[in-house]
Length: 397
Image (cartoon, rainbow, N blue to C red; front, side, top):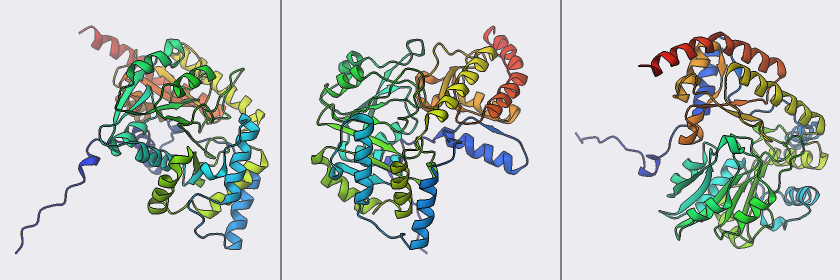
């Protein structure tokens, strides 16, 4: 009888960490399946309806049998519509030949890092950062170099501090504006300064269109010849489940990106591409009325959290998240998140998911109704006073 040695996973998986937001959400869904009521503030899932035109186009695609492989870079008419959208929003029209349509923005990011990184390559990113960025980098053999930003400075990025982190091993700088998890929106001057530092700038622009007040989200498109722009229909068009994103890349990068797309994903699903095309042409992405609604929800949530004792020096300018200091209730953000879920029936994201500097913080999504926000605040108000007393006693030991 031959001895059997259990197969071990690849070493590149050793550095990957769980996406804690999804862990919380999955536990919340399990509780709901058991009959518990849960208010979901943990996930960035817009509650607005997708554009009617997008839904109709998806249904028509299914009826007409438009369910086959497409060009690996995406339908030409979709890439042309994406280019037209940039012209309308940013005043600059990329060549459709530099646009790669992907099954969501996450695959676009994986392809970008796969292109840019060899073993030991460094990627600089402002912290707090989107929880999945470090795992993309580590999976591709790279090293994360964080640049911590501060809540009392509205999480503003300082290009000079980034410049000091650039080394011969730097392969990319990552920026998300508006940001998940902070809601920070960076100025055009900051973005231009980052693009001029030398390494390629990977600009995550999935939350464009979700800016409130007098702020404006700027695209990195055209700031240098070494810019990679990521976007999609998930947030702006409330079409998360369609899994459709894109990457606008320098011309030199497209042959390699296309080869990877052909081998890894083949193409994005044709019904999703048809739906995205119709949504872009409809011009219905996050209308002003919806932005006003998000702004009102943000104000409601920020005010309520402050009244409960959470630290929020400045209101977020964009996306639909509030990253709040919860240290008066405890420093272990994962324990706090699970505690709120189990004891209060409120699902939130632990700060540690977004980098070590966010430990002791919690992220709240306001992509839900005002009634849901009200209920979540009421439920948290029932348990937090006791938590605060307990935390004070432990601090005195």
